[in-house]
Length: 93
Image: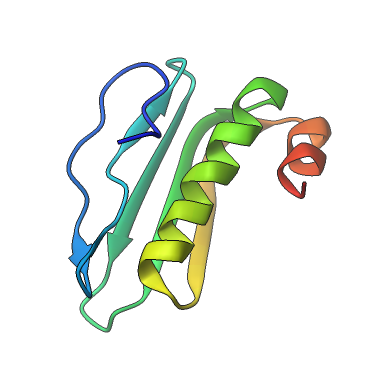
């Protein structure tokens, strides 16, 4: 799994034969996770701190979920405790 920068990664769910990324902790400050609800809606949850250094990895994670899901993906940022404007700008890449 190419999204584990530091920490642990869990197995992701399988959807139409493609593996979704599991939970990933980036540098111990940002955790990304993916879940699919019973209706089939995919949500990526951000928890912790999103900064300039973690923005590229977070963007790669979300792109992998989009590629695997092939549909709309919701981003849940309610558990972010910190996010720099530079991180959002960088992730728009």
